[in-house]
Length: 619
Image (cartoon, rainbow, N blue to C red; front, top):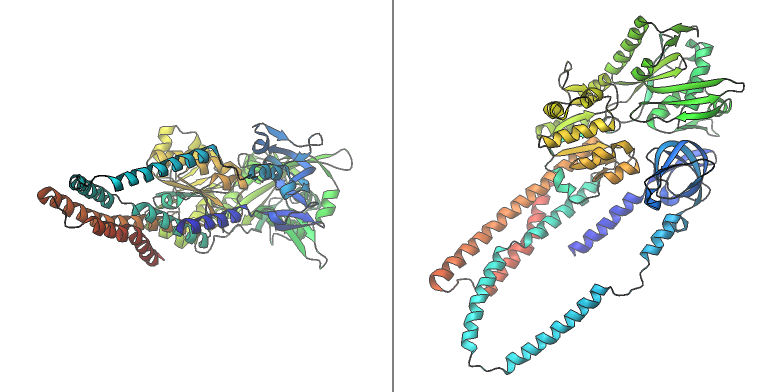
């Protein structure tokens, strides 16, 4: 019954795992639907890390590269353009972004036809089954023959045979009593129950052993955005032309040059979309950062469709976690080419040589002005703001986004700390922003902490393996980190003997998720590549759910320890009594039937009863 219920549970979990939520465009409007509700004719936007949900054909694409190894077996990345516009379901987006028109879904896709051919079962027996049937028939005939021979055999040798059988029975029974066959049942019941309870606590277990491994975790390397924070952003502070725009959506304070360049950069350099409903309300879709920027653009007077129609995109530089910036080159009605960049403020600033003043005039970016811009960035970061800069050729416009800390995260971090689990923040954000959020969440206690307690990814990666091992345990916050920096931190922590859990949501987090003892991916913001590389999926993207996984993992250990203590007590008692009695007198006080009865109650029923009692206490 337990195995059957567990198989049903796994089936339900697999169905939940396959129920991918994705964005589609229907009637010029982007909406979220289940992958099961996708239909032919839907327009699907694709970006780095996405899984191609159906067969389709390219509509638009910018630097769009697809990993088709799951279908073709070839590891070569395929670039999609007018020469090769076809997509196959199940493939992964390796780079760039674009849109596709769905031409086939479900069983009619290439993947569906392949799966259908694999799953066809003619009901024929395998060669092994044929051989086992033959062996079983042979053993049955031999058994019947021997039984008949015993029945007609002479009774003169009964006494000797009975004596040998008695000795053999005692020896076998002692072995049966000593072997803890109830232990595997107790472990299976505990893991299965914990997995079901974790599902209720928003944690989808992909690998059963991860339940108990999480109970041994000594350090958790957590991303900031969306896990420790809400990932719901709004623009709260903006600096344009060297002065603060207050409120940040006050378009009257912008020069006409700055306003037109900013609106063009926002509308063209984005993977999001703005839809104006019949009621006049605006629906903004895309990543949380994109939604915040587009909403800000709408408040500044941007008409999304009009702004995009005034120029055409000729090249895209996709944003990724290594460059921490993304750009677009657009062709104006004349012969002008405008290049817009958007990304981490200090990285964009380092590439600029001029800036746009309050009157819309270009000014040289002097050392004093660079220092002033850096001070603005540091001040915004210290207020827990994510700083993003816009640049147009030689112009630099900055603005900041607020991403508040999730409710309950501080309590969850405190719980981890008191339980002996160190929480580290590993984020691609500015180090000052990361420190401010870490202080707010309780991860960092000292506001004046310096290296190596707080460290930048580039500093950590330039150190030797020995140096990284030496400082790994001291690191609490790592800012401006790339996925490879997270991987290096995981490797260093494991070499120091830690059991490491890692959270991640991006495609580039896959190596760290795979390397860690427990990989935890995000169910909402996580890409399909990240989910497949993880052991547990956190369905609500909340760090508090990670802590619940640790709690259930430890309950697994506690339950198994208590059962082993209970079982060893009975095993030792039965073993000692029977061995001493058998050696000293040749007889045992407990006969075979009595020992088997004790063994049945203690192992099978005992495992089930003890598991229920422990989990009632845990719950």
